[in-house]
Image 1 (cartoon, rainbow, N blue to C red):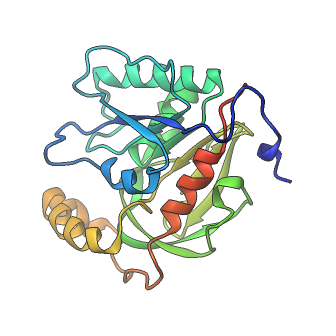
Image 2 (image 1 turned 180 degrees about the vertical axis):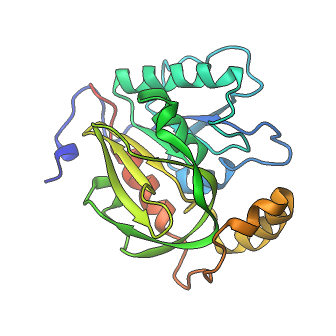
Image 3 (image 1 turned 45 degrees about the vertical axis):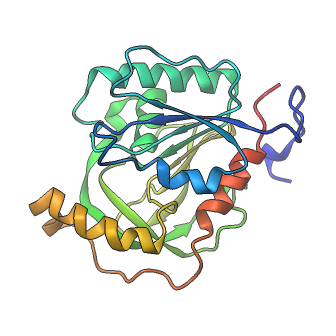
Length: 246
């Protein structure tokens, strides 16, 4: 039994999860990375709050899970709304809510719980399909093969994480691909398993143009996977199965 499989009280497994999505897109009409996760979270009732344009910190009352999504922003270039989101994530962790950070959201989790000094500019940004290897067994990754190929798109990354962070997966270019905050139900995912092959065929050419010369120093070499796009659904299922602390 994994340590996070221990029974919890105060939460009935048959209850429908209520998922708070922190949408971190500065231009939501153009970029909504969190939307790609929605098809994987059909088992939950979803509420979305756009953090860059929200003036108030949303309440966590009534929510069972939290997802922090991707962004065009960089943790290394602070914005006023970063502090609001960091507060929300720290409160969610303190309450015992399961939290999942995706790409920028993964880095924001590290920023919120340990500090921005543990985020750096990537030596070799990953844009396109990469191979990820699991390094530690964990509930979130039970149904995920190792290695597996997935889409990635990032110019920043977590580095030299302090305790209690655990690194669960890595790639050749990025040592910290998936993380967990000790034994708490708090995970960060740097790549984009939620983006399907079909969506990536549209997404990647557009964003390679959007970021211009940055792509020249990025790894963009691997072909898309031939297997079904079910890794994100497997992760989402395991994430939602983990109840909040009673």
